[in-house]
Length: 322
Image (cartoon, rainbow, N blue to C red; front, side, top):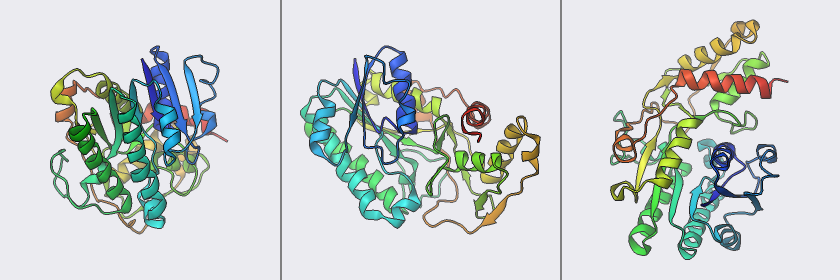
């Protein structure tokens, strides 16, 4: 089987590439390296089952080239980050909506068997109910959230109109090995880890009471594989929460990070935390119900936040320590 992984040089995409290459699949990566990194791909480049296409999902001909002969698409390419979308909504829309439509259309034309795509928990918007269940969403709170909701609507239309099998995975705060700690839009866990390792005080947005369903990368890999391979007709042409199903406050997260890092360097335990203002577009709390994924896909997440952080911080300390 041949899989196209868009955004394959990114955090999630490169982990998916490694996993499926190890399982004997042929893997094609499409990436423009806007946010992905070549060092994530170094170990694959000599593999005869791996093909790298340097291209952009905003360019339809690149999408056509990438899907040629492909059985499945795992679409990870996107411009993430709520703050980035607030600062530059036009580029976020170009990549996340126009690029997504290009990939859907190219996949339809190439008669791809199934199109599995990265959706987002940001789609829940101002919906206050917890846990989040797939059929109940609110109004989006950022341009990024709008783009990810539009993705779901386009996928549904392509399923109904053209018969393209689609499955959306609403990712909840994914973390783990290969996640970039650098840049203005770095995710909170690798950013905090890097700051602590450099004895710098991380800044928490708000009072630390906001909570998230932090989800280790191996749980996300499991969901992509289940979505790609399921033969249950009830399980396709829908969306799933992709999470662990538990929530952690930012203060609890900081404590766990310090606890794990202090095993490597006791001085980190003395680094203080700074509290800043709440961030525009942020939702206060996020917690996923994973019952739908369990029922229809047989999903059983293996890593809690504590177990995932232990694995991730061992990797971070080995690979990011300056």
